[in-house]
Image 1 (cartoon, rainbow, N blue to C red):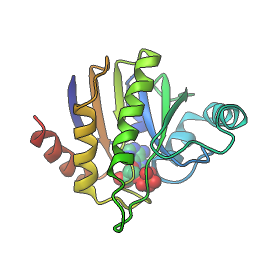
Image 2: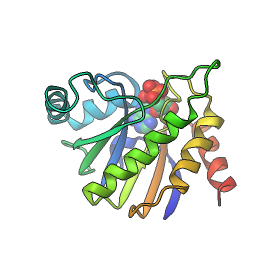
Image 3: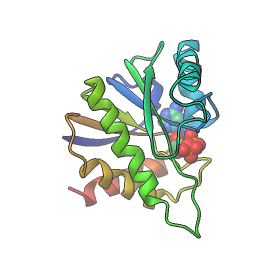
Length: 171
Ligand code: ADP
């Protein structure tokens, strides 16, 4: 598997599936979630509402992942996952790692071979960047999967640097 980092907008990625840093409600939000729903169009929200009416009446639990259509995005699927909010008093790294493992598992079920991840939990959920980058790269690295390309798509330069450093450390 090839793990890369690029600075850019995840909604523009030409990959089989893009991962959304969603919240449990699955009904959209700010940050990368807002961008995906805005650019992907109403079909994504419709699909999320169906998930809420079906398998996830109480929302998607932290650390789990589920796929919908990608609507008008270049990707075929959006894989929604819910990162943990950061807490200094409690180690939530397993929950963050689970987001990456579970997203890869969903990608395998779909037959997706190329996958783009954002910097899950590092925005509104306040996870320290270097720590989150390390957890993300390690989790992807350690997961057995048929996905051949994992691209971390980072919005800002600081995130890009942090993920690049983490990737080099795990080579
Ligand atoms: P969380 O709630 O999991 O912390 P956020 O969406 O608040 O998620 O932030 C996660 C990261 O995604 C932040 O680094 C933010 O700058 C970045 N981000 C926001 N919009 C986009 C986008 N369109 N493409 C890629 N990354 C984005």
